[in-house]
Amino acid sequence: MRKYFICITMQNGKDFENMLYPHVSVDCVLLGIDEEQLCVLLVEKKNAGTNQTEYKLPGSLIYESEDLDEAAQRILNEATRLKRVVLKQFRAFGSPLRTANKEDVQWLENASKMKIGRIVTVAYLALCKVRNTKPEERFGKVQWTPISKLPKLPFDHKEIIEEAIKEIRTWTEVEPAIIFDYLPSKFTALQLRRTYEIIYDKTLDVRNFHKKMNSLPYLIQTDELEKHVSHRSARYYRFDKIAYNKMRSKLNKA
Amino acid sequence: MRKYFICITMQNGKDFENMLYPHVSVDCVLLGIDEEQLCVLLVEKKNAGTNQTEYKLPGSLIYESEDLDEAAQRILNEATRLKRVVLKQFRAFGSPLRTANKEDVQWLENASKMKIGRIVTVAYLALCKVRNTKPEERFGKVQWTPISKLPKLPFDHKEIIEEAIKEIRTWTEVEPAIIFDYLPSKFTALQLRRTYEIIYDKTLDVRNFHKKMNSLPYLIQTDELEKHVSHRSARYYRFDKIAYNKMRSKLNKA
DNA sequence: GCAAAAGTGTTCCGTATACACCCATGA
DNA sequence: TCATGGGTGTATACGGAACACTTTTGC
Image 1 (spheres, chains in turn cyan, purple, yellow, blue):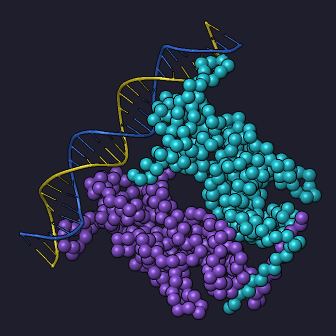
Image 2 (cartoon, rainbow over the protein chains, first blue to last red):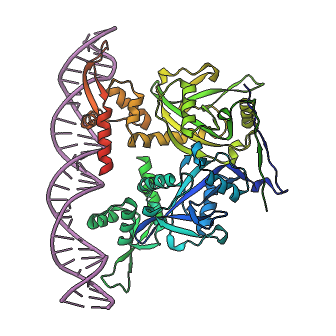
Image 3 (cartoon, each protein chain N blue to C red):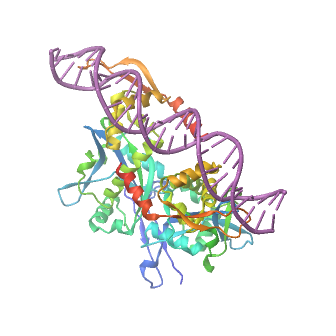
């Protein structure tokens, strides 16, 4: 049995480079910490006709000539205006049932102006500074939502978020540098500890944590102290990227 | 600017279920151990016109209604006739440059009878018993090739294999059960040790290895001994899946 | 003076590493 | 009798976990 599949592509005389590729999408799970909770960035999903606002993960079909990593950076930038955030691809989701819900498909067809069949999505993960995010206007409103209070989400976005949360725990273990990408350049021991506590959802012993910090070659004490706090002021630390990389390359040899 | 993209799909009156989806493929990196070396299964890639045989990873476009995991199982089964092997999705490869080599694309168009543009591939990994593999005839010849002697490969298959080798090391650490899926149901300490040695590409201390084995609740000594070997006969061990799962669930709680 | 967080050391336990010799078997 | 792998124990090092009190500062 022979099978034929013919694709005809048309566009308004514009370059092929800017064409969307309506078979593969990239979704970004942007995690951040706000009000002592792990939060995920959701964007508004405007439903034609109805007034109710629903939410979804920031994501998009990829462009014809765009690498997956590039697409992820683009989406992250559109949703937050942040640049050079470390993004990690963590899984592809490709069940044919992803597009089983007709409302979801209808919405996507309206949004993309394309006929949508099946879509395989590649999911990315990043840790972002919540305070710094200002999405592009045309991207609509974004909302940092605690992971304990996720609303109804389209497609399999809930599953994607669950996987992302598992993933970030193992990721921070193997590549702790991403934590410092997330923190301000000077930070206190408390800030660092809270970050780990929220990511791992458990409390850490203060003394053991200090001991650990002192044993890590890439955590440098500075002379600066917190000011104007109503308690003993804490010392600021900084992340030494060079020492970190040196340590890593040693580990990899052994 | 509006963009249009029209897809027309035709087929010989057969059901849509069996249609290939020419935008996403799945490639399987099947690793095994032969002659004390880590090997990867490659399949013949017949080039129309020329007589030379080249090789590639077993892989295929996915079918319209097929999940990614299903596609991976199908490909594994076609290439080895093995069933119920644990496969792990480890990364999507989606650079537009994947299809930069025209020969590769030409070959794929011939093989699939489809017009091929860009393809995003999702890569899977498994550990297989080399001796048990007998591919389906129509799949062509397969060859277990030592990873140190990879031939020229199409697309980015070399990169995919390199990633897979890194991946299997971390995978066996977090999920040692896959090793026992790979070994015969009764195995000696030597067999198990060699398996680890080859995967990690380093030698392990014999005494420490025995000590470790004894400390693991899921490794059970049997009363059986090797026979007809020209040295003291070794004891057989077996893998206790129940004990393994019990141990895992404890770990996850803590 | 009090609330709030900073900072600091010791003990214990389990796991990883290093290391050398005698034993059983078939050829 | 020799070649081959089987099997065993001890000492040391390191990192993680548990645990309580004094210090500093602003209000």
